[in-house]
Image (spheres, rainbow, N blue to C red):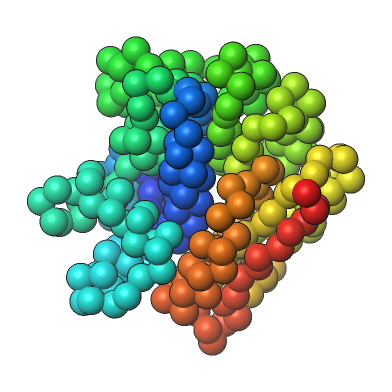
Length: 285
Ligand code: SAM
């Protein structure tokens, strides 16, 4: 039984990093005219109301996209990847008021070209319905109410020979961490040249250490990790950091994150409680 709803968390600091990485990667891959297959294994509802009950209940976006939106309005210079991310959020909010947040399906859809295809998976019955209302009319987009990790394998290798896979689970079950690693290793066997972007939360550091270890010993080359911690690791409940693990990242992403991550720590982190970042090449090319 799924209880996670992304509407409570849309636009939080984790989404800022995740979506900045996603947008940068997609821009890079679209520099070539050739068709691209984008797979989003855990799509969510696609578009969120920031003035809705769920977002207002947690207020998480105010410490994420909301803060950056205000800084930009006040004339604060932004790192290029964050400025670019904010431009895309602005497209969803043409009135100049930040009232809506585009999730990964809508962000990708904004930049989908006629030759590209977007495959979305979502298991929550309400969210898959909302997703269909937003994107179901576009025949370049396929929406499946199926398990995204199994769906990803079925879609690989892509006939387009070029692909970006976003893996963004809600990690409601502890075994998700192991399953994600196992499925990515399988996916890479089918399609070794694809770009894979895996999101992870740091709730218990040992689980992320294990995840990294599984990927490092898998034989997969060229793996990078980008992490933003708003507080130091702790034993209390809740997420203190989150990150992205990229396989075959665009070569431009490292430099973009080298600029963006310290800025995000300064503006979204809490220095007094151990905010920080990680920028690591987990496995060489
Ligand atoms: N990718 C979205 C974004 O960036 O806007 C957010 C996704 S949210 C973190 C995770 C979603 O995965 C939830 O909506 C949840 O219902 C869905 N989900 C959980 N298990 C799933 C599974 N096995 N297959 C597909 N979707 C799943």
